[in-house]
Image (cartoon, rainbow, N blue to C red; front, side, top):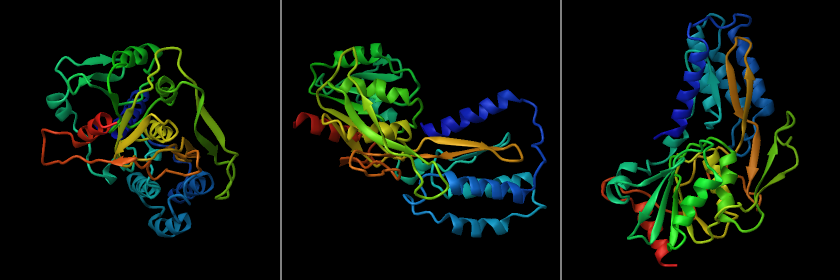
Length: 334
């Protein structure tokens, strides 16, 4: 379940459906002009050069000699796409009718999730499905397990209240967001509103607003208010890994501000900058991160939100999920 790749595939499908018949891209500019345009757009607007210690001028010096006026459109796409992967950011893509470039941040860490293990050894066969959530009791009814695989925009006051009230008498809840590649930002607040009892500041964001490396707007705070439904105040173990990206990482970052939530697993894949983009002279489109999000102490975790407790799967044992086992231990011992 590589959600980042799923999102990229969905984007490709949308493009294909919009224009089934392949047409030549606009021929209004040369490979050199397209290269210069894309490099300059990133240079002036990308938000994480310093955070990721990327020397964009050095990148220019390596990629510019690979551009020539006789190269094919496939060769040009390969060079431009490869240049964008230097940003190590799955919010960065070059998009044509024949291909989409991507980095693949989930491959930067070990595979730390196997849902088949969970359905075979933890959940009952008739587990509940409520909107985007899969859930049921585990550990003889002592703990509620909630699998949240994607921010689909389907988190609602109804399904959250139903789920959390069902586990109101448990020792705690496991919220499993491993390999959650993100999606609808509104789901973050609809989800977390059920774990607070007062208006709470979660993190602070700013947008790149000038060509200089330090040209950013003032930080603006993001708050969550309690829901009008059932709010859970017990212990919540939030499971994450390198496949937890974008809205998943925003949620992981927000747990740092919520005392009843503990982040467990592996470092997330980042994606704490919202993407924006435009169109190259030849008609291809692109996007990259143009904002930054910091925790309440001013830390920038674009390279991945670290867990409070590290826990990894033992890939040689297909009968146990050591991350869940460790989460159970943390809940039952507190």
